[in-house]
Length: 194
Length: 379
Image (tube, rainbow over all chains, first blue to last red):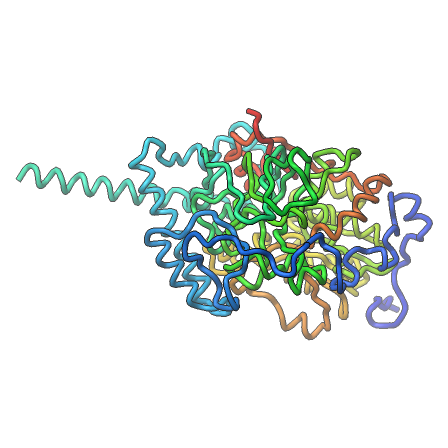
């Protein structure tokens, strides 16, 4: 008769290692067996002492009209001051914040703004003494210094079937920029010869 | 470091951050780390990640300057800083949900504040830098105990407590079979922590053999390489008497591998908030009535999650960003008792000047990398 597997009848599981065995072999086994010893049990606990000595924090100055979620009642008192919105990407971002976090438009506009932001900064960088450098900024030299070949080939890794896409993602904007520049120079050259 | 667009970062000179609010401190960073979740930013997956932002939510250092109302730390103190920015006084903080603070993130109500983690997480510059602004210095940072190794302290700012918290979310009972998807630092800490809570069997799943080796040696776990199986869910069913695991922990998050379409649509084309392969495998491989704990990070837009199976199986789904500082007292005890040595997972120490190569190594999983630290002021 075929043996009946566990889920089809009650109280039949492959025997586990005993508590004594586990305690002897694994450092600290069961130290937090009692849920009361687990710091996030229960996850919400009233009246936790945090070190705060205010009921509501003093507000930090708002140095530019700080974008905020429409789901907030007001601008929270403390916030990050990194990279204020600017340019076309900033305009898209400010528009995105008119939609609630529940709307796909909010997030999709922010992602679109991120791509525009990258383009804006790449183009701006070419007008500086510190233009973007796809070799140093992608850190791709690590492929040669840190066992790139042996890390990827001959291994049973699931990520090797899509890694070929990464250089395309990274290089597309550079190729397109180069094509646009070449077209602009060609057009300029034509104007000069006519 | 500053972000320059997907897959690109560089080192730039920036002004030392200023005190913006009376309870701010400025911390001079000595050591930081690159987190697996930083890769979601690096790959351009998290909305409102702006060019020019400095990443880094795992760091320790020395107090360089304090605001006028700071009482609990002083200039010169060596401090460890939880990745959560939180006020300590709002509805959520006073209940212990530090990661859900409502007073620190204007950009979103669905997540609290996180250092160096996009404007979706409030636009704070992070600690992969020489200096960083730390709001609510009386609430978040703690002095590093004299007995504690600084590298252990860095791991205690996110990876170690997040793994420990993930095991707690599983509500593990004595003898439970626990499956952990992901053998990165968080998954390895979750596996190790599952034993502390009395698990009878711990199984770790990944596709990187060197990480599975670490899961065997560091976390005493059984391991399976999902790339070696036609269907890892069926294999896990066989391994658990066709019942399924009692608890499954998703410690992978948004860039899970194992399904080409899911991975490419999420990680490369950004059409999903994350590639929910590990989460779907968790739902499929846990037993009916079991618990799925999610500590892998996902973006805020929709993901193709098999929610119908979760409902039909009567699963308990538990998840959150970790409230780090709540975990510290008990984790300190476990370290002092010799049950945990967080810095055992550190494989690389990268000078801040070479951080672009560090990101590439971590992203492409080169050189058997598990946990890279970032060391400021050394080249």
